[in-house]
Image (tube, rainbow, N blue to C red):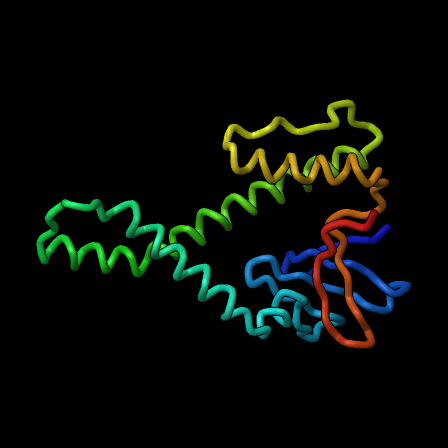
Length: 176
């Protein structure tokens, strides 16, 4: 079990490695500090990976999908409408990205709450209420099927981690 206290700034601090490392997490900036010194996060480090090839293909596919919904054979489109379509088409993948991120965040939050309730022996209400949105429910059901098929025993959830050897930190979603 990790010990958590608050820093003078009000940020949570976890005492790790037999209390030799105080890992502070600045929630506003999403930054980690080990014994007061900034350390990169796993997310920050993996952000340097080149993901352009699959993302470029995905963005192009989103643009094609956009035009499929807007262009109908035989319909006359004037220059102003066409220019507006081009501008909207350039931004369409961003709106789709935001929707997907929102769905992913909602799925993650539901699973986090589900695991927290399962790990808390004092709770009798083991499952949070399922959301209405079908895409969010689909993500949650995928997790529930995975859990059922793998007979999971929860050990830690949303646990802060830090590597002395490699000097990076992060939040581990689940140890099971």
